[in-house]
Image 1 (cartoon, rainbow, N blue to C red):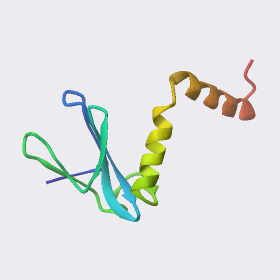
Image 2: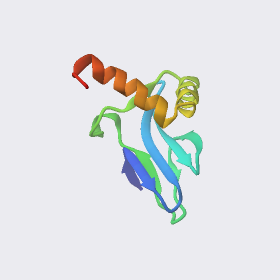
Image 3: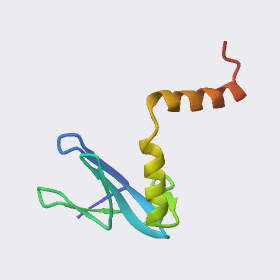
Image 4: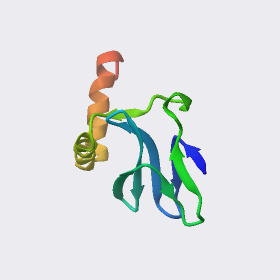
Amino acid sequence: MLYLQRYSNPDDEILAEAVLVGGILKILVSVKGELSISDKIELEDGKLLKPFEGSSNINRLYSFISEAQVNEHVDKARIETLESLYKKIKSLWKKYFSIH
């Protein structure tokens, strides 16, 4: 068994990150663009991946009240484009830096 905070495998198109959902450790998993929330991931080679215990993580985990809130954020992210993100970030930078 391996413990993780983040995991990626470009060959299998898998991305995973430990998150808190309702105060419970979970793994948010994207396999070929399809999202799911799980307690663990079993890889093709038989390895089992689980999230570290909360205090063992290097960074603070993303925290959600419920799976519904996770889905709400995913839906918002799916409508973003590089252009829309650039415009949002640029407007924030203008507040703090002089951009000519």
